[in-house]
Image (cartoon, rainbow, N blue to C red; front, side):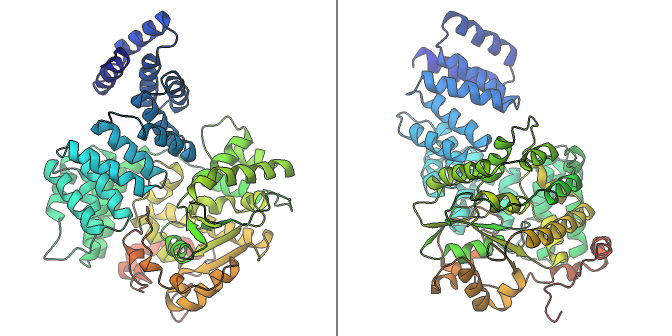
Length: 529
């Protein structure tokens, strides 16, 4: 082993032990002796990353990567920090470089798998996860990562096997325990409540563990028809995370969004992108699968591109992707800035679309950016997916969304979820007034369920696509699905989740009151309404 890798591996070990001070001093000493010591920059990058200073880590890993182009660790960790910074295209390119280097160990194989997963290339991720599992079958996290990727591509049997192996090796692996429950409906004869509740008690001080396990317990009780108990467990699951989460000023953000001027711009003329937006768990994945089943369309997944480009163009110094400062700067974007924004989006998305003439971007929170999207990409199609307000709120509250995105913190409280829905509803009404109907279409989840062919025809016509039967048989689409709907969208349409809120009775009365007080018809989309 060369001296560079020796220091890198020792640095990773010491970092895992929390011995940062001595590690930092040694790295600085090495740089003083040799300003081109890639391993020293790598170690400083690792220290910065572990302390959530991702901007500095990016700078340091980039430096190490440049100085040691054939070093597997330098290249892989640079790709990893790029994913954490939301630079998915660059991360995938960097991972491809690392993937060509020899002597990949099990840790690097797992890391590359995670990078490919985060960039939407699950078909590239799975071989790396399998390599890490083959090398070290006893590592629970490797088994879990393999299971998650197998679930995304629809191999639910393989996913279940991998999750079970993770639990065998680590009985309280909360991610594997929770994921296993999501794969199938729990029954009185076959459930995991004893193991889940035991793990919940043992890990009460870990907010993330409590969040995952509590959601899995709630899902189990819901499957068993015990709805009030399910809701009680959701409250327990979210309580600690809610107390730890930073306050997001939703009302001021939505107000600033409505104040944005939506001007006619030349933008970028391409009609390639189809944006599918809306609240999570309201049918966006379903619409994505319908359109993505067309031969001319590739489903690129939930791209984090547009929001990042707006932030970058705004030159806002805040560390939040979306806030009032960013929006006030965006309100003054010139026509040429919008054109640049559109070109950048298309350039960065191109490697993720597998060469298809059209592609979908199914980032739900892009509903916040509809006005800016229209100005940057005036020929793009924007589809807003709606669902019954009560079902929308309940589905958001009962779903474990990513904890890495501060803007999903509204789901930690049922009443906050209802108020967020009111803001969403008001904003969509605004977008429909200022964006031409030829560019923005609203569809209802319930209409698709009850009038599938008619609504599919409507969606395809709006996107300028010819009819294809495959769009009606979306559940046969074998493309990966890396969202919470990965199990449901592989089944034909069913109406079982419509009106789910009614099963909870008076437990949702406060949510119902908030919606009604805002003038929202809680019966929208319900049969017979």
